Amino acid sequence: MKKMFFAALAALVCFTGSAQAVEIFFSTSGIDPNAGSSLNLTEGGAGGSLFVWVNNDEATTIEGLSLDVTSDTAGVALATDHLIENPGGRWFGSTPGVLGDSPLVNDSNAFNFFGGFPQGLALHSEILIDPLAAGVTNIGFDIGNNGIAVGGQPPQSISFGSGSINVTAVPEPGTIAGLASIGMFGCGLVGRRRRR
Image (cartoon, rainbow, N blue to C red):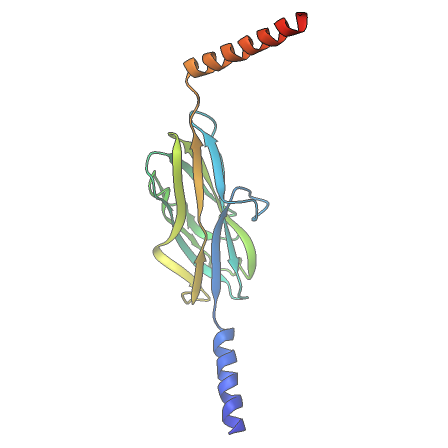
């Protein structure tokens, strides 16, 4: 009976030990993966960047990573470029995917044939974003057409992070002038009180 119990336990350990988990998530920093996943932009202003990070909990190399970057609200932001990190060193045969509005990136592919994306945390890519109009769009990931392979097999667990792009409206010139005149009127009242 004891032998059967230990055999079952060993089988369970072997099975759970072979579970390959990959975590893919956004950060607003290419240096700090924990910088947050909400990108704040201003309508008509400069663009910004979202960074895609990958955490592989196995020593086995990620050999293929095909991703779609999704956006649930069209017309808020546009991906203008997708730069895969170290495309000739870590990733071989990399393509940035088709850029759009919703999704932001469609079928980005990164293939690794030489064992350069091993266990641990690493930067995958940078997505350059331009603001289009005021609003919020929630962003996420889907698996692209070519799938994901760790050690030649699909990972048993994939965790996708999410984030948002928030585009703030610029106040109308009339609103700015109105606020400025209210501020000047307030300053005038303060100056008048001081004179008395």
